[in-house]
Amino acid sequence: EVQLVESGGGLVQPGGSLRLSCAASGFTFADYAIGWFRQAPGKEREGVSCMSATDGTTYYTDSVKGRFTMSSDNVKNTVFLQMSSLKPEDTALYYCAAVKAPYRGSYYYSMNEWDYDHWGQGTQVTVSS
Image (cartoon, rainbow, N blue to C red; front, top):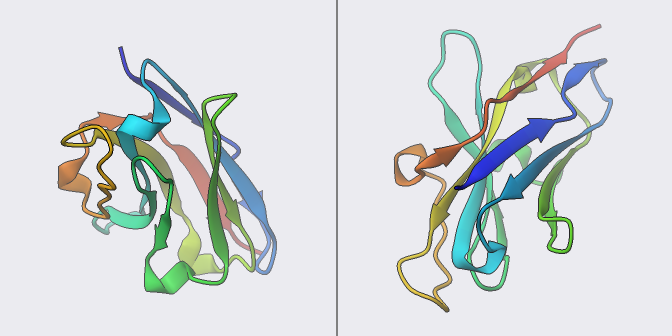
């Protein structure tokens, strides 16, 4: 069974940093694309970053490029989202999600929430002074 558990959220001042973690179990990273998504109150959920299957190439939405870094520890089966230079508009509930690639060796990735079928419970990030 695929399970994803996020942690690391909290309250941080503008300009500060946080590192989110997503502990994964029940699957092999190389066979899945993994994404970070966020949803602010009153807004639709949006893709923040994703990591492709097979080679782990990372992709970012424009609003976080240069500020957020997605990485993984394949030994610990954990995915991270390092967030720096945080802004109030980064305030949201952050989720990690996973979807199996269509075939082994695929470099599949997606920033579209509808492509993902496994989700964590989310961790709240609040950026405020």
